[in-house]
Length: 148
Image (cartoon, rainbow, N blue to C red; front, side, top):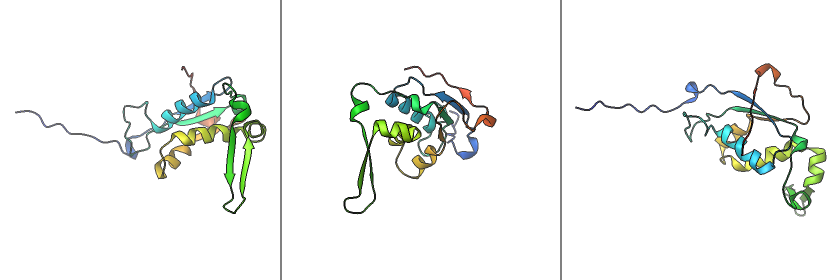
């Protein structure tokens, strides 16, 4: 007779998320965003379950020092629509980098997360800051060195 194996599924009670800090200085936007998205989803964890938020908290600082390859710095545009006819606004990457560099990283990561309620919940665990300092020192985030 064989022993019957019990399969245990991950649920919210089993998850203890960690806090990680990432310095965005000198990193390429797309590569950084994909690594952040994997951490937010929890794909680096053995507890990974697609239907449960098992990811970690990520604090990104120096958002204004992110880089793009090729001609993207001149050509990349961000679009926003008010919902009214003629309500489309275009904002270039350079303008966005000056005004809201946090949005650049958040938008890139958002596109790589699952769509729906769970993806929005995962995005709330991403904290992006302009400059060296951030307000999550009390959580004692570990520095995460990214290799790609």
